[in-house]
Image 1 (cartoon, helix red, strand yellow):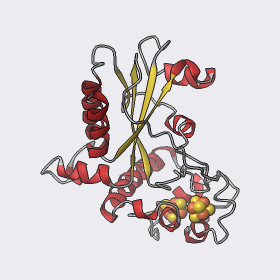
Image 2 (tube, rainbow, N blue to C red):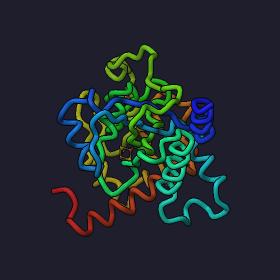
Image 3 (cartoon, rainbow, N blue to C red):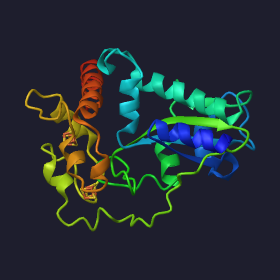
Image 4 (cartoon, helix red, strand yellow):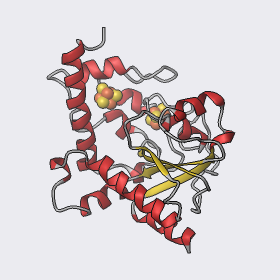
Length: 247
Ligand code: SF4
Ligand code: SF4
C-alpha cells in the first residue's frame, strides 16, 4: 500500500526516485552532504528525486491558477510540497528531513551519477539514458529507512561514451558561442559572455541542448524552456553586473 502510494505520487508528478544508503557513499561525498543536514547521518538513507521530461511542469502549471512566470519560486515551492507529500506517504514524518530544496548546496549531480542518471556530456549537463538532457533534480530527502518506492536506478545498458560516438555532434554545431566542444569541459564563460550580449539567440532556449538526439521525446515544452532560460539569464546578468563577469 505504502509502496503503491509513493510510486503513484512520483508518477503523478513526472518524477523518478533512487535511494542510497549514506554509509555506502565515499567519505568526500558524505562530508559534502553533512553540511546540509543538522542531524546524524549514520544508518540513514538518501532519496534523490528528479523530474524526467515535462510531466513535472504540466503538474506545476495545473497546481495554481496564477501563471508560473508570475510566481516567485514556483519550482522549489512545488518540489517542497511534493517532497512533504512523499514523506507523509512513507510514514517517516518523525525522522525525515528535506535536504534539498534548501539553503545549502548539495552534490546532486554526483548522487545522480551514482544512480546512473547522469553521464558526462559536452553540454555541461548530465545525460540520462532515457531522458537525455531533459532531467532536473528536484529534491533530496534523508530518512532512517529506505523509501518503499519502485527504484529508478537505471538498469538500461547505456554506453557512457555515447557522446564520443555521436558522429555529427549536433550540440557542438548548434552552439553559436563555441561553448560546447566534444571531449572538452563545457565553457561556462563563453556561454555566459554570449548570453548577456544583445545579439544572443539563447534567451528562451539552449540550441545545443535541443540539438541532442538522446531523449527528444522528453524534451521540455517551449514555455518550460523559456521559463528556466529567462530566469537563469536574469541571474546571470545580475551576477555579471555585480562582479564584472568572467575575466
Ligand atoms: S548531441 Fe551527441 S555529443 Fe552532444 S550531448 Fe547529445 S549525444 Fe552527446
Ligand atoms: S545557451 Fe546558447 S551559448 Fe550557451 S551552450 Fe546553449 S546554445 Fe551555447
